Amino acid sequence: AFGDALGGILSVVAQNVSVNIKVPDVGGALGVSILNVKHDKAVKQEDGSFRVDIGDFYAEESRDIIVETSLSRKADEGNEVRVPHLEVCISYLDTIKKKLIKDKP
Image 1 (cartoon, rainbow, N blue to C red):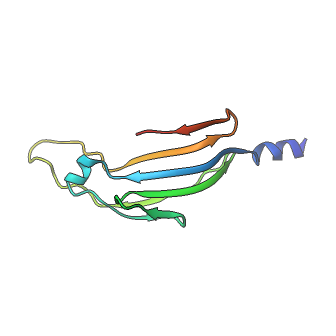
Image 2: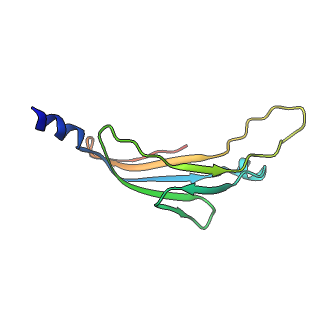
Image 3: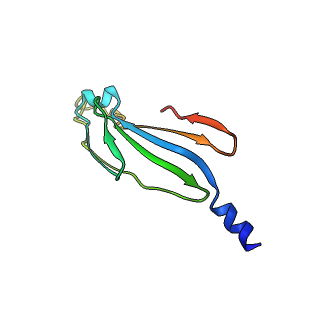
């Protein structure tokens, strides 16, 4: 019984997990930028975005990616405007459904 429980916890649920982090065009126009991504596998791309290849995920597991970003300038005095600062997309192979998942913002 213990072996079955342990096997369920240690089963891979997502393979080749990759996270892409970028500043949307509207945020970039207002001065938003990614200053740093704190993860051992973070790689800055030519367009200023970051890619983090995380690898495999096991059931009940979580991982942290810390992003340091600049805040936007005000778009227009007197008006409260919501400015998206980051777009985060994830792609992985769902081992349960045997399907490639590509998330879009």
